[in-house]
Image (cartoon, rainbow, N blue to C red; front, side, top):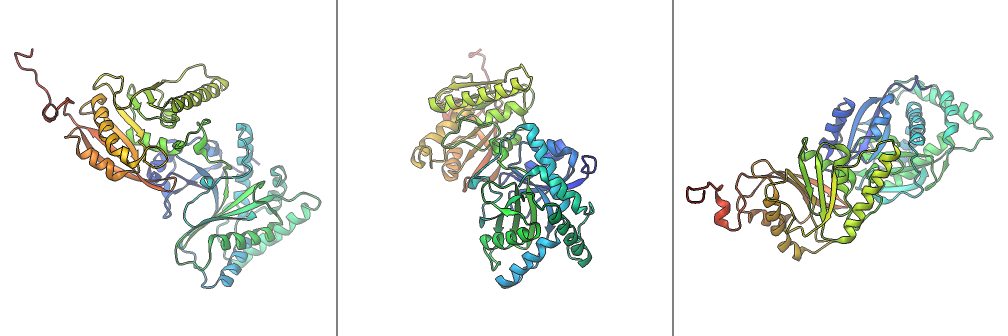
Length: 468
């Protein structure tokens, strides 16, 4: 059966909004697969063979994974709710479920080997979208019993045409065989999650999830369970683009390295995307002066172990959380057979007076206070200019870089304009952070040498004879 599953499948993944192309680069780099970015922001799709499924779970840019059952680039929705409901019922019976369910089964065996824990009540942030998204109580039971179902289905691997009548008849026949085999066996438990974006639909996300979920339940005779489900069927709708999938993750992969959370803990996937923008090199000194719970440096040391990371915060509680998160990573690596430490130090410091030599840092990367849950907009007007000047002091002129995340764009750009040529903005990546529209600003340290006055920073210092 494992050899039969060594086939091409399409994997979908949710990624931090704004970092779709960064995630696609990682897929190309580590899986040698070409990813395509969805029209709906925050999703990518790529084709792999199932022997690479474990590697997919190890990618750092991806939040949630699902195997695609069927994609429709231009699905023609009917104009009334009644007609749409009938369409969902017909669609559930036509879809080529077999290969996707086989991948789901294989994925379960991989998760068991990894010792992954199962989610019982997913949070809103773990859903696959953030526009018009609703989850209804109509979704999928014992994973070990699915092989009998799959063997009964025996659908062709490359089954794609879901509109032909003969194929529909084939699915119906195999479906009836499943029911015969399942007599006396507890059915699988499922749920449907619908993520919808678009204003030209005559139905809501709840409507679609309820109607499509009812059709899935009728077809498979599965039992609906909102919390203790075995299979989660995903219905992603973006205008006329429809993707039906089966979830491969029960808990977002962005939680992989953090055990001690703070009020504004950055998602690990977003931290990794910011780090990729830096392009760290061997022996680079990388500093996070406002590390919080340490999400950025932890992602860094796990991926770029030939660079050195230094992180700190002025809040003692935040530093303690970072230390505990580091201890968790060290324990995990030691349990895995590694005896080496991490190229990372955590310090409690004043971020406007860093205990480092001038021009000693290659990269500065941090999540700055938004002025929402931490700090205030008023304080940012004083804090941001001081931060940028201190960052310019410790960063290497001409080669140093900074990648800074903030939602307080007006204050940041004003502070940047006051830096008298110390920083040059290369580009900005716009991202969604907990529903807030924020920017990741990529800066380059100019060759101007830092000095205490405006006259000192205008031109690089050249020693005169008397100064020598």
